[in-house]
Amino acid sequence: MGVLVSGRGSNLQALLDACVGDFPARVACVISNVPGAHALVRAGLAGVPAVVLPHSGRDRATYDAELRAALANHGVLPGSGIVCLAGFMRVLGPAFLEGWPVINVHPALLPAFPGLHGPRQALAGGVTQAGATVHLVDGGVDTGPILGQATVPVLPDDTEETLSARILPFEHRLFVQGLRQVAEGRVVVEGHRARIDLRPGESRWLGAP
Ligand code: GRF
Image 1 (cartoon, rainbow, N blue to C red):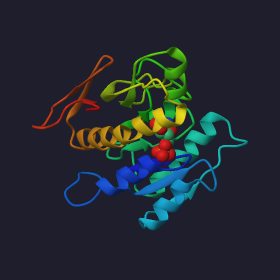
Image 2 (image 1 turned 90 degrees about the vertical axis):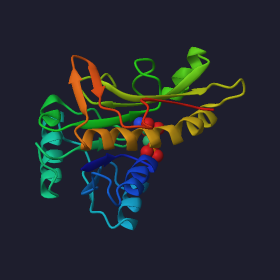
Image 3 (image 1 turned 90 degrees about the horizontal axis):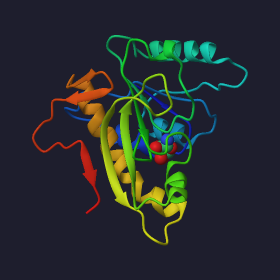
């Protein structure tokens, strides 16, 4: 699989840490649209090829084609490859999505609070529960079929930082689980709904104790 990143790379790290032993996927390359993203350091430490592909000055179709070419250069190909968006802060067009599963993690309980700053939106919305969602990517922004979700409480004194920090470990767990399910061919999409052949001990919902 190829992992697309833009920043810190904690979700990338969760995937790198999971992809050992009999885990059914390996990270073939990490591509960042942001030069200097810390995720690139993580890729280097893990011995995984890291590519910087800035999007500035390109229209969406051109950039998406460059991304597909970079993935292909590292053996991530339609039909067999998987693409993971691990904090990748760019929308991908339909031509990019064709031919392989694309998995995204989002720090909110979709369909609530899509787009930027999920935890900030949750606080502003006054909700009592926030969370994380891992989903397949379709043509929209955070709209694709949901693979798994986790809920965490919103506490009275929460800031965007404290709420984000409570959500983040669940992003990591959900992402690894969703990737495994996709890589093992256990996900079938019917309409907008993902059907998953769950293994013993797996749940599509994770909650804080
Ligand atoms: C995560 O909260 C992710 O859900 C959001 O951006 C953040 C990226 O964190 N899209 P990291 O780079 O994986 O640490």
